[in-house]
Amino acid sequence: MTERQPLNKQTVHDELERARADFHALIGGLGEADWAGQTRETRWNNEQLLFHMLFGYMVVRALLTVVRIFGRLPRGVSRAYARLLDAAVKPFDEINYVGSCMAAKVFNRRRMGTKFDRVIASLHCRLDAESEADLARGMHYPVRWDPFFKDFMTLADIYRYPTQHFDFHRRQLTLDAAGRGR
Image 1 (cartoon, one colour):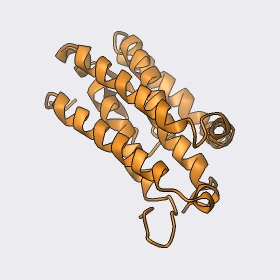
Image 2 (cartoon, one colour):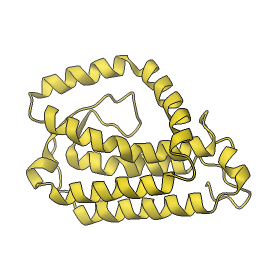
Image 3 (cartoon, one colour):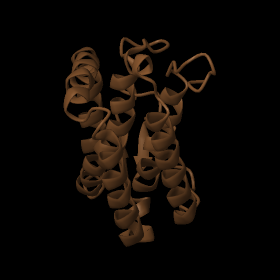
């Protein structure tokens, strides 16, 4: 394993706040037609993709717990678990797609902003409570599930993951002729 630099918590706090502000600007500036517009390179419409972007932050809260558990076990355990999950990539992709379609009906345009704020606030609190030892703990991940999953990721990597995911999908939004989705 290579030597990793300690996580700069303030950098992550700033990334979380930038994404939160960007998310609110996006949902606050959408016209009615924008919500239903088809995205670039996905099967989702803009509303569904915006939920999926929010979901990236929601899932991190669960991943933090998973890393705490697997990070205390021999690495071979998480390696085997990651391989098992990678073998299930096709059902995962379909569940990921359908789940975001369905969840966008619950956490729709009227509820997304509030949920985003709550999730970001939770991540800020959890990050502040992490020790350097906790942030260095890690596990193997299913690299076929997401382009930002690496074979081995630390808790510090997991805190950075949702904003990478957010920025990637941000470019897939198609929002009016002014190009806000670019």
